[in-house]
Length: 206
View 1 (tube, rainbow, N blue to C red):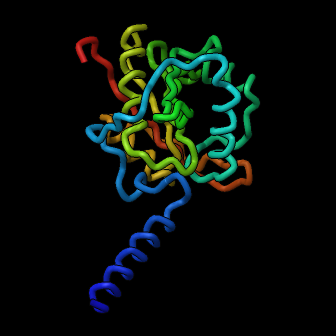
View 2 (tube, one colour):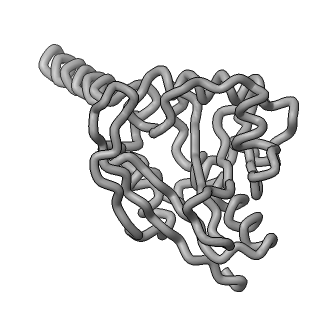
């Protein structure tokens, strides 16, 4: 019995090391990009409400503080986030994801962006650090796609840091294709990082 037990212990430790090798909140995103078919029935998606701003600002600021996955580098106050991504005049739509206890675990915003043509919205997806349930982003995107089509948008743009392999894989699985690249965009500390733009065309019958 000792041999099988040692092998099982080694296996469990190996799995633990694999999980810890990813940044917190990224387990399952880089090695196993989210599959739109892998949905979580415990997640409820609804339109954002003004009262969600403080919780969502805290959620996003933790992602920003961790670094490495978002091009955003400055924290938001609840009022700033509401204006920019939740309910402001340049927001086409925004949806939040709640877990089975009602806690907010992520949000997805579709906004106007200056360099994009009319009819194209810019998407941002954010999930709580440490939350590893697969399918949350895809469930949010179901609602975002419907919202974009209902208001007559023709396409959705996603701009992702080139070093965010999990984000690139996520949008690729949703059907986004490469649309352009901005080379060596500096971070606040001067580090150059490419930005990859991906685009999804919308059709009214989808």
